[in-house]
Length: 161
Image (spheres, rainbow, N blue to C red):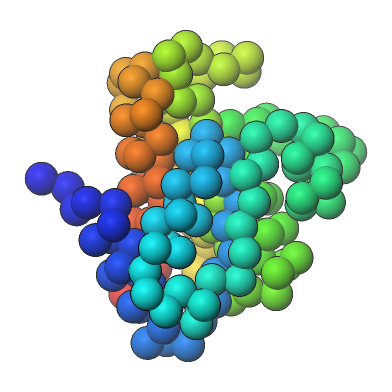
């Protein structure tokens, strides 16, 4: 059985506090669940600098200051796009770590051809990596939770190094 979202966030929060490091979040399909999970941990102000739900092109422009030209050759809902979002949110907040998520929660796929349950997750910081997750179903709420859990697990693995 996979770790509950609140338990995973508590473990990641403790790792960030122990290391004296900060995080900023740019999430899309998870709808704020990544940020909410981290903020639910007592003492989150020691590591959480801010987050943004970057759900639309307008949000990307306003919240991340990423104009259309900056993403012209990058496909949305891809590892490259998630990596760019993670790097940008890290930069804008001056955080040690940037964590980003982008995908298609369901019940249908997105306009880029991705099936429901598709997400790309990335971290930028002392370690930079991106992964793709495919849940294989269109349960929107379950996918949002799965995306948030996978994003926090990705960060947790990097913090254990």
